[in-house]
Image (cartoon, rainbow, N blue to C red; front, side, top):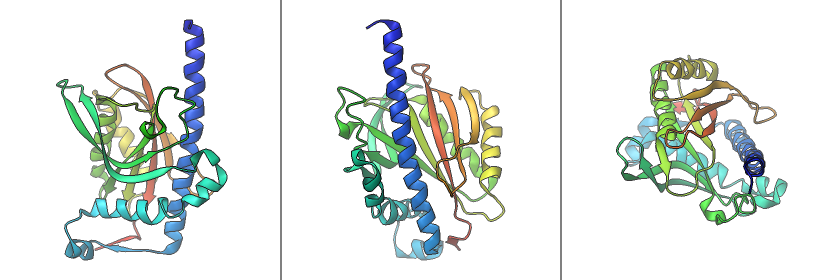
Length: 244
C-alpha cells in the first residue's frame, strides 16, 4: 500500500472511530441527565460506614452499574452495531512505562468494549477494541493537578493491546463554588506549565449532547510514538449530589 493510500485508510478509520466514540459519549451524557433528574444524593460518611470502598470508586460504580448498564437499551435501539456494548469498572490492561521500559498493569476506571468496530480495525477482535474513561473527584481547584496527572498517564503509556487514539475523563465536581469552566480553565493553566505533556490544543468546549453541557476536547501527543490523540472531558456537576 502506498503512503498516500495508507494515510487515507488511517484517516477514514479514525473518522469512523471518532463518530462511534461520540455516539457513546452522547449516551453517557444522557445517562448523566437521567441521574440528575432522579435527584439521588450520596453521603460520604454513610459510604465510609458501610464498607471499605473508596468514595470515588463508589460514585463510579453507582453511575456505571445503575445507569450506563441499566439503560443500554437506549443506545442499542439507536445504533445496531452497539447491540453487545459492555461497560465495566476496574478492568486492567498492560502497558510499557515510557520512563523505565517495564511492563505494568494499567487499571482503567471505566472500561467500554464491544464497540462494533472490528470491521474498521481489521485484524482486531471486537473484545480487544476498547475505550477508556478515567475518573477524578474535584473538591477544590487544586485537585485539577491530579486530573492532569491522568492526562500524563495517557501520554506516557505504550499499551500492549490496541489503544484507540481517543481517551476520556470524568471529573466529579463536588464543590458548589466550582463549575466546568473554572475547572477546565485551571486544567489548561496547569497544562501550559507542564513540559512533560506535549499538547496540540488545550481544552475547548465540545458539544456531545443536545441539552447537557460541560464537555470539552483536547489533543496531545503520545511520547512513545509521537502520535496525536484526543481526550474527551466530561465535567459532571456533583455539587448537589455529594453530602458530608
